[in-house]
Length: 371
Image 1 (cartoon, helix red, strand yellow):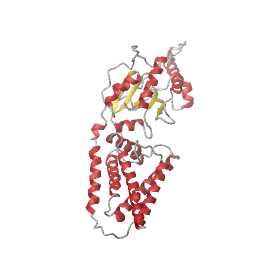
Image 2 (cartoon, rainbow, N blue to C red):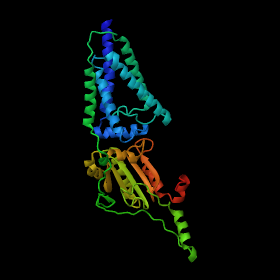
Image 3 (spheres, helix red, strand yellow):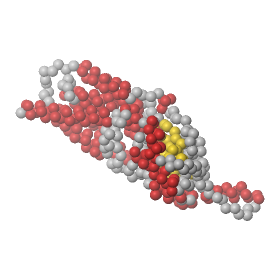
Image 4 (cartoon, rainbow, N blue to C red):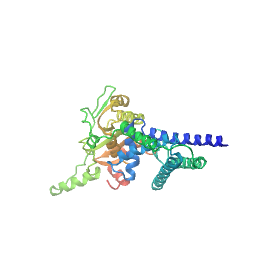
């Protein structure tokens, strides 16, 4: 009977330790800095963490997860400290996920428990954590209250600080100045199709019908007529990357160079341009992850476009909370007309996008009174 309890205890310890270690490693996939930065923007910023605090909290949290996973496999202070601390952390995670699910009003998106390696919805994560809490609670009851082991607290502190330090070394915190640097604009034609035909296209400009107007009312009439065919000019916030982005119709892409979905979206836009040369010009904001793959990105997309490269955190911040790549935004005089993002419900739809491009100002204003 005692041997059976020992086997069960070890089975529980290995299972829960595996969950914690995999959770820590997954938050470093596919590369430590990229993964941790993504975790900060998608998970911590929404909780109110500032950009100065989030980098330290994220790395420390992942280090604690790794340490608890390792410490569950040793015997020092296991019942008195490690198991209660692990249950407490899991309870905090359950509370957080419950709060997030309540705020979002549903069970969508990735909770970030296993980073981008194993996407998991908040409800799935809550169930996983509750099961782990149940296993640890049972483990607590079957372990002997007193044992002959001489507890060494230095084992705990050494594993803890070594784990946290390892995470900081794998993903060093970049200085704030480096986070917001961008590459210079490429001196290229806005759209160059790679089949040998080079085309340069300006946004379609609506013609204002000429009518007989009294001299003293020319300015007023022209202003009214112009407002009837296009939205008023506003600042989109992207002019610091592309100076002419707020003039006429433009398309802005948010892509990661190594992202297959992003490449496919860019390829669709290129094919659409070949069929309809009047399509607004495309500019791209690339995430600085695998930036060396940008030439291959354009080769696969079938065209070369002007672009800028943003560091990971600024890229996610500009893309917007809760949004993912690939992103395609249709702008008209700086106004946000249509925004596609991610690979699920709001993913890029070429045929629908063509319809939005061809709609005149009056039609668009019916669905978006802010224009």
